[in-house]
Amino acid sequence: MDSILLFDDPAIRGSLLPFTFTRPVADIRVGILKISEKWEKITGAPASFLTQDYLQKKFPRKSGNSLAINGAWLPDDASLGLLKSLSANEALYFGKTLIATYIGETEKNLGTVKSKETIQIESEPTLLLKTWNIFQFNGAEIRKDFKLITQGRTSATIIDPHTSLYSSGNIFIEEGAVIRAAVLNADNGPIYIGKNAEIQEGALIRGPFALGESSTVNMGAKIKGDTTIGPHSKVGGEVSNSVVLGFSNKGHDGFLGNSVIGEWCNIGADTNTSNLKNNYSPVKLWDYTVGTYANTGLQFCGLMMGDHSKCGINTMFNTGTVVGIGSNIFGPGFPRKFIPSFAWGGEEGFSTFLFPKFLETAKAVMARRGLDLTMEEQEVLRTIFEMSKNYRIWETSS
Image (cartoon, rainbow, N blue to C red; front, side):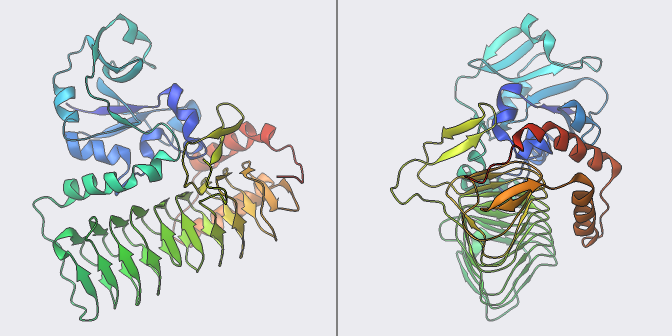
């Protein structure tokens, strides 16, 4: 296949907010790789996106005829075989969910699919349907990605005599990574350390675990399994079964569990996230598609924080808190469990983080990494600011 087009399924995208405010579904990281990167490695073809109009300029669609694949589909060993057997006049479904079909260059959507012959998948595909699936599927995806990335390759060698390895054959280290006086235990799953990453003295890490390129695990950190720290991030304290998408910092002490943190976020020192209710009942989480809280069916579920959001020192997040895009949370007590995009405040109440002030902060944060906030990105964020204004009806209660 010459190219693949990863499309946002409208029946799924809304359930993955706030993360899909700023990216297509297939740009979400689960495991070591983003969904789009998994497909590129499996198919050997370049991927592009069919997404919301306001995101399309930042995530362009490549020209030409393409195989369109549901962006929520997490591929496995059988996926490529299913796609290779698909003809141009067929559409692959699982139940009522479109999985894949061919789309012409002039087609702006998948409206012609109904005229194609329907082919049903016999075994259920792994689909990212809810935000909590990101951390729920993360351990299994690390295992799959580890095999995909490392097969036929040789790991760099750890030369530090004070670092202890368990199941060293299940640990892969890219060139340029630095590890000092740490403990890496891969008995229960693989550990992947990205290019130019750093693991500092006294860090304790259990697999499955992935550390992205140029990211840092700080001194004395305790990282439990099923955790991914995306590229250009810093992490410290205690972290369990969580995903940091990239370019974000949780550099200090404090607990983060069963959580997903977007890009360009900062978690203040001694911030703690509750991931279990005192009565052990299932956690309810804000659902953008219904405008209220929905039962996740999970006993463990922590924080969902969208891109460019931040919290001050000693912030306490309740079980199942959702934070939108570009919010700034601070102050004593527990803030409300749903914090809209571009909110400013905490338990004592919120006001709107005015967009020009937000842009100043975002530009300063990105400049520290040598990056500019492009005009395309500014327009995306401005659109989200307008889209989310109806949520910013401020009350002091949570």
